[in-house]
Image 1 (tube, rainbow, N blue to C red):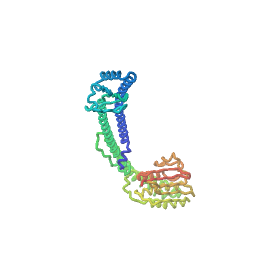
Image 2: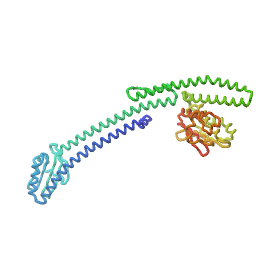
Image 3: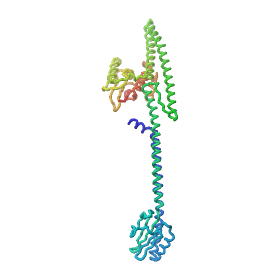
Image 4: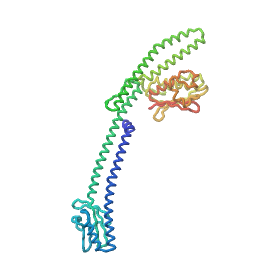
Length: 442
C-alpha cells in the first residue's frame, strides 16, 4: 500500500494521468462531434427536404384541391432519385414512386406527422413521414438514409478503434510513469538509507545504462564515491589531529599546574580546559555525523533518560536558584541512549544557563498525536526568530551569549543527534523565554 501511495503521489504518475485524461477527453469530444453532430446534421437535412415537400403538398391541396395534388405528386415522383418514395392513398386511387414495390408490407400504415426510420425487405433504410390531409387522403414521403446509417456504423466502429488506441496509449503512459517512478524511488530510498545510516559505501543499483536515469545513477554513484573519499580523508585528518594535538595539550595542561602563581595558574588551566573541551566537541560532532551510529540503536525508555539528565543538572539549578518543573510520561523509543542523553543534556544546560536566578524551566516529555514530544521552556531573554536557523551552525554564538561559557557546539551536536534519529527540531519564542521542542516519529 505504501508503494502504491508513493507512486500515485509522484509527479510522473500525475503527468501521465493528466496527459491520458486529456487525450481521452479530446478523443471523446471528437467522437461526439463525428458521430452525434455529424449524423444529426445529415438527418436534419433529410428531414428538412421532406418537410419542404409536405408543405408544398399541403399548400396545393388546400388552395387547388385533389387533381393538382396528384399532378404535383406525379412530378415529384418523376423527378425524384431512385431511392425517394412518394405515396398517396385515397378511396379511388393509389400513387407512388417507381421504387415503391416491396417498400411497404401489405396494409401497413405509418404513424402520421412523425419521422420514423424504417428498413424494408431489401435491408434499405428509409426516413418516413406521413400525413392525413383528411379522413380519405393519406400521403407518405420517404428518403433513403442507408448511406447515412452505414456512415454512422462506420463512425461507431472507428470510435471504438480510437478509444481502444487511446486506452492503450494511456496504459503506455502509465507504464512509462511507473517505470520512472520505480527508478526514482530506488534512487531516493538508497540516498535516504545513506543519510540515515551514514554508510557511504552503499551504492545505487543500476540495471540499465541506455536511459537518462541510468546515466544519472552512474553520476550519483561517482558522486557518492567522491564524497566517501573526501569523508575518509577528512576523518583521517581529524584522527591525525587527535593523535598529534591531544597528547601535547594534555601535557601542557599538566605542566600548567606547576605554575607558582595561583591566579595565573587558574586562568591558564581554564584556557587549556576550554581548548580541550572545544577539541573534544568537534571530534564528537564529526563522529556523530560521519560514523554509522545506528549500530548502537536499541529499545530504550526515554523517560528514564530525561529523569537522569534532570538529576544530573539539579545541583547546578539549585546553585543558581532555578526551579525545574517536569511533566514526563513513560515512553519507549528505538535509539541510541548515550547520544540522546547528550542531546537532552545540552538543551537543559542551555536552559539553565540563560534562565535568570529565581526563575524556572519546564521540561515535558509526552506523546503528541503520532509523535513523541520533548520540550524545554526557559525563562531567559529568548532568541530572535531571525537567529533560529543560525544557532545550529558550528561555533556560532549569538551576541547576547558571547559572555557566557561555551564554544557554540552544543546545539550542533543536538541537531546531528536528532537528524540521526529522524526527528525534527522546532524553536518557538514564548512570552517568558524560548521553547525548544524535539519531535520523534513513533
